[in-house]
Image (tube, rainbow, N blue to C red; front, top):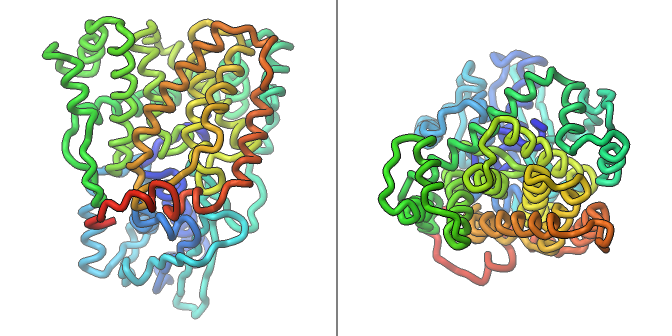
Length: 468
């Protein structure tokens, strides 16, 4: 659950959150092996997709903050720009907040545009000189969704936990649901209890929801232009204001009531779903705090569909929200195990497509669908994202990424409605088959369409960036 949905900072889980966490791990290595007082110099090498779109995704900023020891879950996002500017101006980085070392971001973070490491397109290497004369090197791979693998690393403690209901495929999940009669969310909760108490899991899930909620609300009430040079104007602020039509409110609860008072016309609800998704991904593009769900580039889909469920489907209770997020997390986990959630490996189908499938299954269960209907909804959602490329203009998580979240959310709702009105017995395509198809498509997809900004909209829409 908390691997698939984690709190972090935008704009990218694979290019920002992952490298950030890799930097934290490298600092911990230095601390454990030598002590930070022995460190004289640190450099970072970015390869493949991390190099080609790293500037637009803030990869250099992320690794610097990681080296400083800042936590992406708790850092004050309003201070990031000031901190990075000070390091660049002073030429000094305080390693883990403890030891000052000379550091020039333009020299100590290198973008190796023509080099790619074999294991994964998102590779980065940390180099350090210590006073003993040794040179230390560690290579990490950011594999999507904020997950990080160290070169040569095998598994982790979590994989060794004995789960009551082990699941690798959708068929495994369906097997346990049919054998026990439990809903998907109930199966997931039983598995989560192998790591912690149910009460702890529920508290954690609600913290995830509260972060999503705050992100939506903040995004709907922040206007201006997104950073990066594309001069993209925030739209959620104006859309929120237009849809509310002057109805008063003073906090989230009264805002939610004001939304409900607008009625239930199709166009009105459609606009709100788009507004929720826009709000999240505009925050993500601005180095705001979001929930990786399952990635940052696709962070708006699940919150938008969940907020649709809350605002328009009587879903505002802790239990219903928990069921929604537990179900969503399991679908994402299956995609990660059997395919990928990394756009650098599979294109945008691996991000928006997976998030849409997660949201579709979750909404279907929460609206009373059977386990098979929930899996059918996930399959429908992904089926209609197959082949979706990742071609961010300027390497920024803005165009077409932000709007794609609105489309992923709408497709999730449509997929859920189709599944709820269908008999899974007659379905021709299973979720496992569509996941296999997605992976085959990812393998066949030209690397130019995998988060490199070397094809598609990224080359056909020259917008003349001021900075990126």
